[in-house]
Image (cartoon, rainbow, N blue to C red; front, side):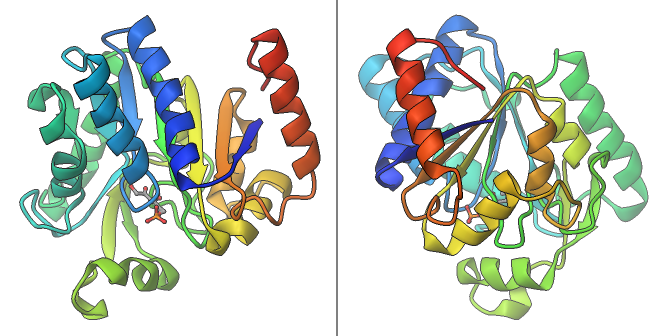
Length: 264
Ligand code: F6R
């Protein structure tokens, strides 16, 4: 695992932006796995800037989002489809038909088939090249709440009480937060060729330390990332404050810069 610790949110977003840009330049028809929430907004702003100022071309890029609230349609302002359209897709030259966000309105009896198809679509297009992740207060990636199997696939899940509380900041009242979601599984996420996990702020410090340096456990689904050979974790100072091996990560990152070679 590569752990990069930067000063603040802006630098975290820029650092992630550089990696995404590098990939798009190398592989113009790459497949990106995308997350929503507060964490990647700065990265998306950076990608929009790169598109507008540096001509970064998204015309062949394909995206798959991790998750969607179950019960919300794509035009609901709190839906993740709406989030992606307004925070990224509408501002770059991506083709809307190349962007995929799970459909939160799929009838209950079609969910299983729909989730299977979502996974098949990813596979048939060649698999996710780079997956962007945030981490929930309870250690979730996607909406894989504590207890989700490391082998879990795209499916319907019930949201944890803490997630509902955490996400209520986007809704008028806590009762409005959907109780279910469709999410890629931990197993789905681990199939991406490369992964970037982003976290910022002191609120995430404890769970970040558990995920990176604690045991691999379904109780902190982000800890499963320890099993993946190509993960870059980008943290601001606050989110890194509980890491035991912080000095080593800083040393290793400085060292790899000198030889211009990524060390995972
Ligand atoms: C969102 C997602 C979630 C968030 C996590 C952190 O698509 O999959 O795992 O990344 O809940 O959310 P924020 O960034 O709002 O703290």
